[in-house]
Length: 164
Length: 415
Ligand SMILES: Cc1cc2nc3c(=O)[nH]c(=O)nc-3n(C[C@H](O)[C@H](O)[C@H](O)COP(=O)(O)OP(=O)(O)OC[C@H]3O[C@@H](n4cnc5c(N)ncnc54)[C@H](O)[C@@H]3O)c2cc1C
Image 1 (tube, rainbow over the protein chains, first blue to last red):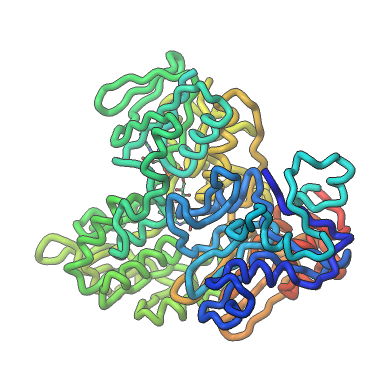
Image 2 (image 1 turned 135 degrees about the horizontal axis):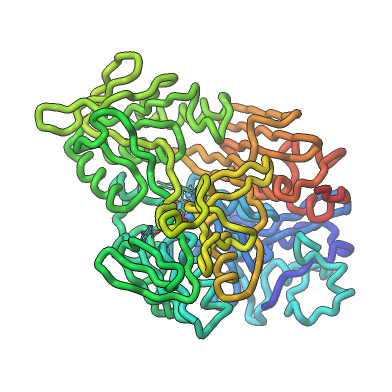
């Protein structure tokens, strides 16, 4: 499966990824259009300031995803492509926030009024199959790669899991 | 290899899925005493409310059992196990052999011991058919009393209001609702939100009897202090008890629930157990307790699935307090130990409340009301049991910690 990996040495914190993510999830799919939309488009990637610098974080689509375990509605599921999402599955999200409670990365948003958990769903791939956040990253701090392509040392530099 | 799973819910299905994933050729049979395919048990309040029907809370797709090659025997009660012969018997006299067996039998509501508890109109809420029956009964009622201030009781009260009952009163023995999950301040916010719908609360007293009306059904609830509350419907939420009888009668070890080892094996040969029916060790207190959560049932089901398939894997002591919900416009999450701890940080601003509890420099619990984003980072910090100090601690206390902080924090885990 392909993953969005983060090279923490390269992120300047420009937030282009956040913007691109929100736009890709807007109705119009354009920046100008997105700004005016009644339902504010929501980003699913978050650039955080840490002691170690700026770090963009989004869903890792965990192999044993705690959000799927926790979903009492049966909405959170894994697609055939390996994407963990709460839309388009066997049941509807009811906004119970169980997934928000267990996601160790804190990358599932709670849309309280809509009663909907909002997360990275990969509904943003371009013709080349690249996610909007990766495409927007000018410093190549974000890369979209087949995870197995990475040699061990290379992976060391990248954020791949909490355990690392 | 024939793997038989008793229980068609969180634990049973997680196990079945896992077995299929790791042992493609295994024969899998799932038995349930409830009719039909699995449903989202936690959503039965919606059936009570009338906002969804049973198919509307389905937990798996229509094609699930076929797709996973699972034989589902629904509507069949297992009455005994013969662990020597590796065979079980159902209520209709059928014998089913197995190579390995999983008990994922869940739990049942604790029945009230008051006089009148068996009157028509007195319900508990655990199964979809109970929710549907209570919903039908509620149509002709003007008033309901809900006994208990736990999460299931509050969901029931909220659902009865949605159903349109004019009078719904929750009787809570404790000084506030959700005594296990919340403190007084946060409970007050939840109560206020529920009260907006017209739900009333009575504290510090317990029902002692259900009173029979002229039609033979319940018409009121009598409280310990002598008060009588009119009640055409009574919903009793006094917690649940693990379904351990099959294991016990087969000679298996049972304490707070079915006793299992690290691999979720019971004391009976070839028999595993997972979900609400087992006893677990709480990771924070080290105490033996019941499991009682959907999340844990799924985790355990998956772990049991590996073991059933012959791939040993152990189940670490879980965090047994882990709840999230929303009433009205108010979401809340509570995890871990929210009353103990030697240091707490509290933030409140109107309808937003946050409390984090530390013990010996580690995060042991938190409450979030009104805003719940990034709660999972706090849950992860509790589970990691790492020492939290300095800037990280400030962020945790201040509600600004993010996933990025814990991925890169330089603090070392101590265990
Ligand atoms: C209204 C309500 C709201 C809830 N909300 C939450 C929540 O928000 N978060 C949370 O974490 N948890 C919640 N829970 C608890 C959650 O539903 C349970 O923890 C979970 O269902 C446990 O799953 P399980 O698979 O262990 O058992 P169960 O879901 O109880 O399933 C047991 C299965 O075993 C079968 N069975 C039992 N005995 C036999 C027998 N002798 N023969 C044949 N079949 C048998 C039953 O038919 C059933 O299929 C809620 C529960 C209720 C009732």
